[in-house]
Image (cartoon, rainbow, N blue to C red; front, side, top):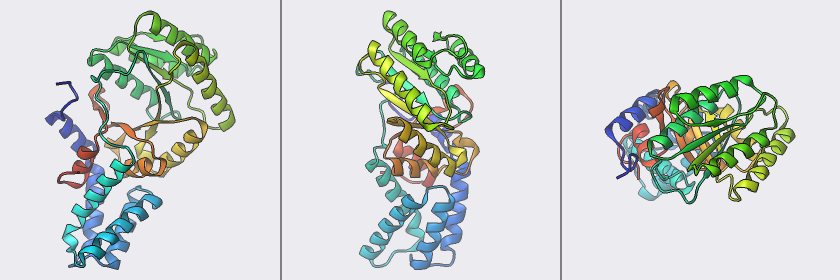
Length: 320
């Protein structure tokens, strides 16, 4: 059984602790929304709508959830307000499943081919380089050889930070001088990885958003150059978002999905915020699976996103 093939007690405790602020906030608001109510009526639904929106689930996703609950109430004719939490949990779990944010392969799962190439995108300050370091650690711990590529050549701090992580984790990093062509760094990284039989390659990229056209061109160039070495590259375009920024994370997701073909999300810094609802809204609105969540500073605190455990931790009971 792989290291991540089961959800260990330690992982559960980390998840519960990381989502505790969101859980306390949401439950407190729900308790106030149904206070004194014996059944789910229009007032309760209006209050619940406000709870979800202020918990950063997002307006569109909130309206979708409310509509589903209204349907349940209509079909059941009478529903106790105390059942609302269970209903909410079930509907959110169903929504996440529909949007492909379901259990993904663990780090020990066999790769479809090698090297498996991950291109990481995201604005500066969201925890992008830290997420790369933690991913490298988890893949290495699972027995895979990993190469890092420092293609964010516009910030000296970005390259230095990635070098620190490579030393900490014990994996090689390919870098060039400041201001070098990012695509050239990506090319060199993949060439070295292929020559040395690496399993996984993780490429860091610049986090600029002030010029969307420039960003789009740059990311496209990096992808095209990588394909010259590994035709399938990149297998994953991973967008890193800071969960603590709430609605700003939605806007970042919108901009980056316009700039490049994002097919996986990592939501970081969930442990320090009550805005965990952003995971639900972003996965629903952008139809991109959340693959990883960050729940602390430690290297073990980057977890595979598991829909069932996430919903269970947030709302209690068993997410289906």
